Image (cartoon, rainbow, N blue to C red; front, side, top):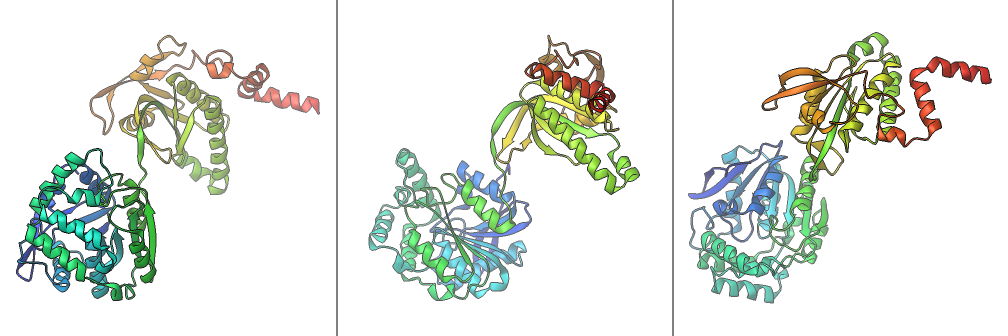
Amino acid sequence: MTTVPEVGYAVSDDINIAYQVFGEGPAQIVMTPGFTSHLDLLWTLPSFVGFAEHLSSFARVVIFDKRGTGLSDPTSGATAFEKRIDDIEAVMDAVGFESATLIGVSEGGPLSALFAATHPERVDRLVLYGTFARGSQIPPELFAAFEDAVEHWGEGRTSALFSAKEGDSALRKRIAGMFERASASPGMARALIESIKAMDITPALDTLAMPTLVLRRQDDPFASKLWSEEMAKRIPNARLVAVPGSEHLPWFGDSTALVDEIEQFVAGHKTTHSLGRTLATILFTDIVDSTGHAARLGDAAWRPLLQRHNAVIRQELSAFRGREVKTTGDGFLATFDVPARAINAARSMIDSVRELSLEMRAGVHTGECEIFEDGDVGGLAVHIAARIGAMAGTGELLVSSTVKELVVGSRIGFQEAGVTQLKGVPGEWRLYRVNGEAGMDVFDVTDQRRELRHGDRLSLFLARRAPNLIRSLAGAGN
C-alpha cells in the first residue's frame, strides 16, 4: 500500500459518515474505531500504516469515523446506539459489503457486538479487541482520569491512559494532543464518556451465534483481562486470546502477533514474516522433461523414481553443506553459504541423477535474500536464480556473472553463455556455463569433500564413476 486511500461518505439519517477502503485480500472486514478517530491523521503514523498493510494482505478493509468524530459530520452530543448501528450498515451498503467480519476496537467493541446481535445476517465473524460489555465495569478512577484528560483536551493526556510506555512520553503526548483536537471537540468527548458510563450490552452477548474472537494484549493499561474473560464466557461461540504487549491501541507496539491472530481467525492461516535479509547463494534444480518421463512411465513407476531422485539431491546437499528450502515438484530450491559449494553440489547432482537415467538442469546466483520464519527465502535474488535455472539446457549448469566473479581463483571453469534479459528482472544479465572438465575431481576440488575420511571419499568416487565395479566386488565377496 503506497498511497493513502480516498475518503468516501456514506449517508445515515442525513449524517455523512466518512470512511476509507484499502486492501485487496479475499476477506471483508469492517473496523469500528474506539473512543475517537481521524482517518487522515491515522495514515501519518508509520505504526498504523504497517498495521493496515498487514490487514490488507488478506482482506479488503473498511474503516470509518463515527458520527461526531474525525471527518464525519459533527453532532450536538453523543448519539443513541441504534443510530450508530445504522451508521455501520450505511458504510457497508456504500462499499457493497453484503456481509463482513466486524472488528470492534475498544469503545467500538460494544457497538460492533450490538450490530452483530441485531444484524446477524451481515456479520460473518466478530473480533472484539481490548473492549468491555458495560460501563459499570470501568473503575471510577479510570473515568476520573478520562474526565481530567477532557478538561485538558488537546494536551495529549489520553496517551497515558492507552500506553504503559514512558520513554517517549513527550512526543507521544504531542501526537495524542493533535489527535484529540482533530478527532473531537471537548464537548463531544464529554458526551462520549457519559454515554459509555450508561452503556450495557451484556444481554446481547448471549445471542451472538457467529464465531467470535475476543482479543487483548496481556499488559493492556486500559482494558482489564476480566472484561475480556467475561465477554468470552458470555458469548456462546467465542475464543479468548491474549498476545504480548502493553499498548491499548492495536497499531501501537508490536502489532504482528495481534494481526496474526486476526488473520488466522478470518482467513484460516497466518502470514509468514520476514526475519531479515542475508547474503546467500541460491541453487535451483529441475528434471529435464519430467512430464514426458511421467507420461511414459506412468504414475506407479514415476513416483518411486522421483523419490530416488529426491534422495540423491538431499544426499548431495548434505555433503556440500547446502540447505534445502523446498521442493518445486520435480526440482529443488536450496541455499549455500558460498557459491563454490553450490556449483560443485549442482555438478555432482547432475552426474548422480544421470545414473537414474534422468537429466537435470540447474541455475546459481548469489544475492541478498529475505529469510522467513518458515525457512523460505524470497527477494529478487531468488527470482534471478530461478530464471537462470530455467534457461539452462540438458545437463547444464548456468550461473550469473556475480557467481563467476565470487569464485575467482578456484579451479572451476566457465564458458560465456551470452547476455540476456531475465523475465521480470530489470537490466541485462551476462550468464556463464560451468565447464564439465575442470574443478570436478571428487578428491581435491571442494573443501567439503576433503573433510570426508579417505575411505568415504574412495567409496563415493567408486559409486559415482564405477558402479559396475562396485557390484562386481560385492559379488566376489559373497
